[in-house]
Image (cartoon, rainbow, N blue to C red; front, side, top):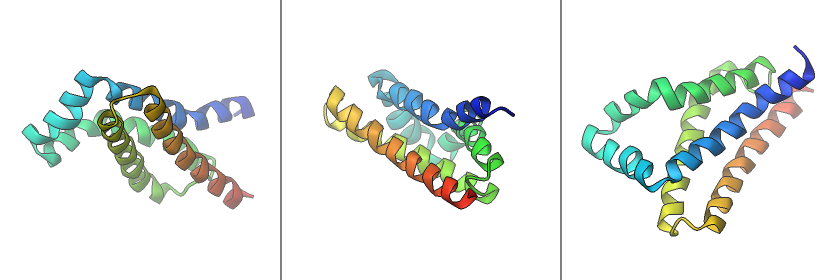
Length: 127
């Protein structure tokens, strides 16, 4: 594996989270997926539907981090849930702030800061 390839694989998490936030930021998607979906289906069924898509993509991205020894394999499941929860809550909070670009940037920056901190912790542990 080349360093360039490794670097781009590790960046999948940040890029993917930004894309997911943009998707959840769309009023029609947010209403259907984050508000009506869980209310109509119930949390367990709604989450089960999300597993093969959103959570699998997060798991895939985090697996690269585990392959590089930045996180433990045992941390992947919890991190998927925590990151996904942060994106959902941030998208809903951004909508409550009127969906302004400044609010969006603030929420995306906060999530990216969490990811950067996780990466720094992993890089320090890997040394």
